[in-house]
Amino acid sequence: MSTISTHFHDVQREVLEHILSFVKRSKLKYHLNSSILLAKIVVVGEGVVGKSCTCRRYVYGHWDIRQHQRTTIGADYLIAKKRFLDQDINLQIWDLMGNQRFGFERFWRETDGVLLLFNLTDRHSFYQLHHWVQECRERIPIDHPGDVPIVICGNKVDLVRNRTVTFEEAHQFCSERGIRYFEISAANQNSNIDAAFQELAEQILFARQDLQPIPLPTHLCAHEPPPQNTCIIF
Image 1 (cartoon, rainbow, N blue to C red):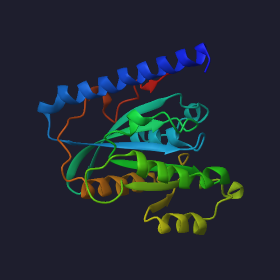
Image 2 (image 1 turned 60 degrees about the horizontal axis):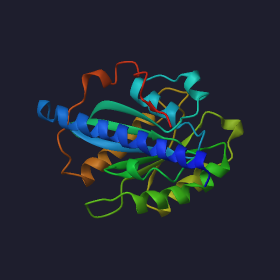
Image 3 (image 1 turned 180 degrees about the horizontal axis):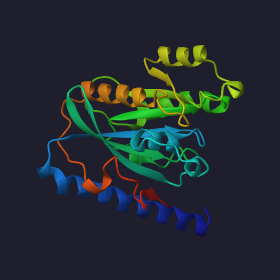
């Protein structure tokens, strides 16, 4: 490995350590001020399947064409305050870069659930689902019986003419692995995105009855515009 490459990975590791340390300190800082539960959701999938747009559609309620044209570098971090099963819960959503599957070991830690996306107009992203599911189940440590909760979403259902993956084959893939499947469109409102996140959150609540009460920092509330520094740059 070249000196430049080694230096790049050292910098990458240092940035990850810094941001994860910051998140951990934030949890401790607000612990005594609220009884709202916190659940960590990691959003993964191949590159350019619409992960960032999907996250922002869910958290902020709108789709930004500029976000559609931007590739995530590293990870984006969002928080949404929701209520499921009569329980207030803060969803800590980590949107991970898709074209670097390996090297995110630190992000997998303390993960409560996974939203796995593929592009309905790109069969390659569908073929890679098997590897993503396997990696999630192997890399995410859990302290309860069963596998980590996973929900799979086929994105860009609005592009009917460009579709290359049928509902039947995607549904069969998920059914064989005991995973719920949704078809969504980040470009359209009310297109199953809320339902997919709700399903995942409820699975987390059922599986993790020991989630600790941790509050939502006021500057990261879902109704506010996204902070300018939420993207972790390598």
